[in-house]
Image 1 (cartoon, helix red, strand yellow):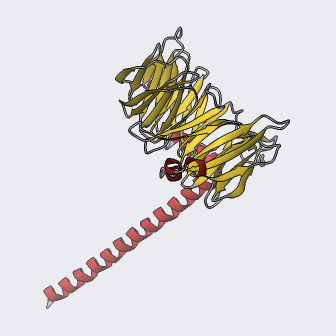
Image 2 (image 1 turned 30 degrees about the horizontal axis):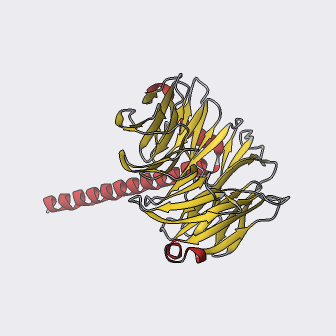
Image 3 (image 1 turned 180 degrees about the horizontal axis):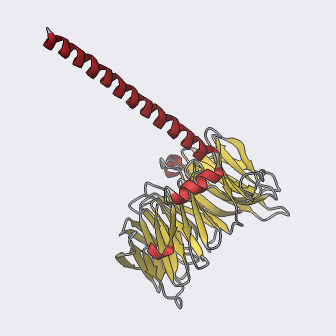
Amino acid sequence: MISGNKNKKNEKINHKKGVIKKRIFLCLIFIFIIAFIVILGLYLGNNVVRLWMDKYIFRRDIGEENLPAIEIDESEDTSVFAYGGYIATVANNTLNIYNNQASIVTTINVSVTSPIFAGNGKYLLLADEGGTNLYLIYNDSLQWHKEMEGDISQITVNENGAVSVVLSGTTHKSVVVMYNINGNEEFRTYLTTAYATDVAISEDNKYLSFVEIKTSGTVIESSVKTISIEKAKEIPNESIIYTYTTNSNTLILKIKYKNDKIVTYCDNSIHIFSNGNDEEMLKIDNKTSFADINLDGYICNISESSSSSLINSQYELNIKNIENKKEHVYFIKSAIKNIYCNKNIIAVSLGNEVEFVNTKGWLVKKFTSIQNIKDITMADNVAGIIYKDKVKIVSM
């Protein structure tokens, strides 16, 4: 009897201890959840807290001393371009391709005097501006090379390896030519009364659009014309399915495809052209210092800050989704030298600092240099910080 009572008593004590431990455990979980929510709320809602956590907790600040570097000769006129996970340099008719550790992967002999580049994913398109040579690179291999019948003025490549080039110096003012991934010509369009100043190919290879500029009258006229690639192969004269025009005070500068939408950068606004419709996304005024459309489904612009309460921020990086129109804002304290965009990253150059911000308005990395930065080139997985004598590689 005595032994049985002791066992029951021990069971009650053990049960009570178990209940207490469970309650303590649940309380700790509850406290952790509350603390996480509070910290997350502060990070999202308080710019001062976010900057402090980015610097001291997430260690997003990086310096140039620990980064891989590509040495370049100051005496040579070296051009640098990032694509995919690579950095490409061109000098003295030599294309060098480096990985993100600054190790040379391959060298390709080219013939270019004034290199221009277009990149999309793993594809790099290299051309001789004003010349005739055109090269398509896939990863680190030469896909094809062509010598054009005319002077190259504009180039583009989509993520599937479809290429378009605009030629001048022929009997026509401009000739727009498209090639497939194998370098076979799909079609060409001749412009006799206007110039093509930019060109883009849709992601599904169904459409090609180009910017047309007419200068024959007293007023410069600009428009975007969309070609059905399927029709262009069969009935070239009936292949233009849409023509988008702007008013006489607007000059179209650049276009980019997002699905079937044409994101259009004008000198005073950004528009979305789609299925014959025109939607203005952004008005560019005298408070707008920079704007860009080279993002995946977003546009962005830098403007003077409308709020002086957030750690004395002077500028706002405004990022807008072209589908749902949702906006994100990133605040910047220093004067901005330039912005560079690729896919979902915006690099904000502040002279000797670069803040890499994603399209959600969050700081991804902050790069600090003891030298002034000459230029920046952006790709999917890497960024090249260009100086006079070297290129520092930042992995995204």
